[in-house]
Length: 397
Image (cartoon, rainbow, N blue to C red):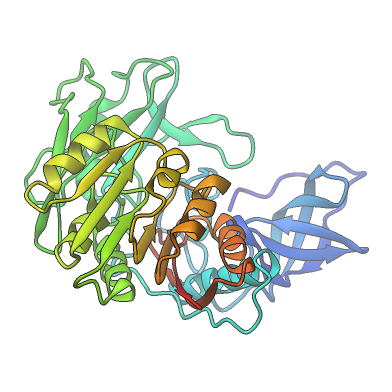
């Protein structure tokens, strides 16, 4: 939490009791009938806050003093926490983080999705709470330094370490400081194999190797080629959890035609194709398509390059019985959802990193009366942050 500030005489801190957790890691309190959104709080704490931004229906406030701390409050592991915008929950015990994420998913599924009585299962914990990220995307300033942004005003913040990054990535960071092209993002990735050099993209004039075009990451005994700019899950251990969950909920796959509508480099597609009779993958990003072709070679997968909302309608009449959706944070476009409803698969498994758009899309898929939401399973892919992955399972009625 940032250091408490001296308040001007006309603005005394307000004492409030934090009531609940909201999306994006903020907590909620009320003062004189208005809603306050407060970062770095924990429900049931009594705190003094200063309002720093007013809105028509709510205000944003910052904690300046904790009067009654929660027993779930812990000491953050990172020296940048409270200033850096990357993490929001390091002040909270891990058990409380897991329950908070489940509560947020449940709230959005009910409030946005309109679902009543659907159980949101306990969040599956990450084996590692720190040092789990295999990929970092750093911003740069005009001096070529690498960093992130301040949580409140998005100003550049130089960082020389990051507690949630793989140690191999943090060790490489000092060698890159001052060598980046101003204004350009720098991606650093690691395969997870000890002793292997991290990938650094784009090429830099630095005292360490940079500009590697690709690397290999292993999941469940299979190796995946991942180009420098292709998307891949940042927590490999939890990516394995996601794969197991998704494939299990799509089963039985034997004899079925399966579709992975946002297949990326083929992570889910590969495991689906090992069991299904026919598998189709759709992907828009060119580098990811090339990776997918390499990763799925010999499995007979039909890979379609293009946007899901444009390519899915072209599959009308195809006997697709299983569909996996893993769209970007913005969720599925309406034409993509309409095309899935027209295909009428027996099972749809929706993997999402944004519970708000997930709830919106589930509502649309179920509103026509063709599907029922049978399970919602949060997975903690991103400890210490508000982000949560969710696997939702739909069955045809």
